[in-house]
Image (cartoon, protein in one colour):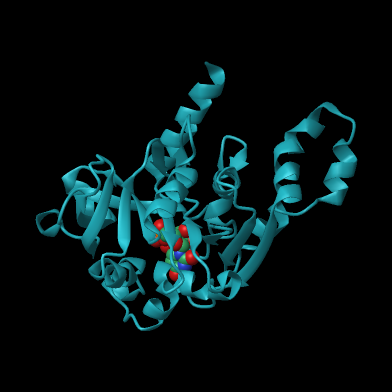
Amino acid sequence: MINKCLFPAAGYGTRFLPATKATPKEMLPILTKPLIQYGVEEALEAGITTMAIVSGRGKRAIEDHFDISYELEHQIKGGSKEELLTEIRSLIEKCTFSYTRQIEMKGLGHAILTGETLIGNEPFAVVLADDLCHSDGVGVLQQMKEVYEKYQCSVVAIEEVPINETQKYGVIAGKLVDGTDDTYRVSDMVEKPDPKDAPSNLAIIGRYILTPDIFDILRNTKAGKGGELQITDALLEQAKQGRVIAYKFKGKRFDCGSVDGFVEATNWFYDRIKS
Ligand code: UTP
C-alpha cells in the first residue's frame, strides 16, 4: 500500500523570478488553483491522504493554503463566492499535511532524503508539483500505484521527449516487460545527458513511487550533476539490481516549472472550461 505522498517544494524556482522572490513556485496558479493543489488532488485520487511537504524559507504560503482562513471564510459565508472554497475545504478535511524544511537546497535527491522523517520505512509516492499531469481517465499516480502493486519496486513515470531536449531530464534505458508497450525494466539512467549521450528519448517526469531503501542509498550517494544530490543517481543503484520500472503514463504533462509550459497549461485548462 502507498499511504504517503512526498512533495519536494523547497526549490528556488529561479526561472520564475521575480514572481518567486516572495511567492513559492508551487503556489503559482493555473487559472485559480495553485500548482500544488493539483498535485494533492492527484494523490488523493490515488487513495493517498497523508501529504508530506518538504518546504523551505519563503514557502509559508503553502502551509496557509492547506489550512482554514477563518477571517476570509467568515467574510464570504453565505455569499455566492463561498463555493469557490469548496474544493480546498474538502481537501483539508480529507487529508493531513505535515511539513519539514530543507535548510540548504542541495538538489531533488537531498530534498527527498530530507523528507525521510515524514515518510519513515514504507514505500511512498513523490509528486513534483511543477509537473502538472492531467488524465481524463485514471490519474497518473493511480496508474503508477497499479504498476507498483504488480512489480513491488520503485516506479518512475516517463514520457517520450524530442531527442534535442534530453539535457532537461533524467533519461532511462530499459526493455519492455511482460509484452506491454508502456512498462520498462530500467537498466540505466543518466541525469540531463547531451542528446548524443542519451540512452533513449524516454525522460523521467515528476512522478515517482519509491521504496524506502532509497533513503540509505541517497545517504551514500555523492553530489552529481550541478553539484546537487540527484535522485537519478540513487535510482540507478536500484536499477542495477533490476528494481526500477519506468512507466509511460497515459495523459498529458505540462512542465509548469518553465514559462512556456506554464502558459501552455494555462491556455489548455482555460480552453477546457470555455468549451
Ligand atoms: P527544479 O530544479 O525544477 O526546481 O526542481 P527549482 O530549482 O525550484 O527551479 P528553477 O530551476 O530554479 O527554476 C524540481 C523539484 O525539486 C524541488 C523543487 O521545489 C521542484 O519541485 N527541489 C529542488 C527541492 O525541493 N529542493 C532542492 O534543493 C531542489
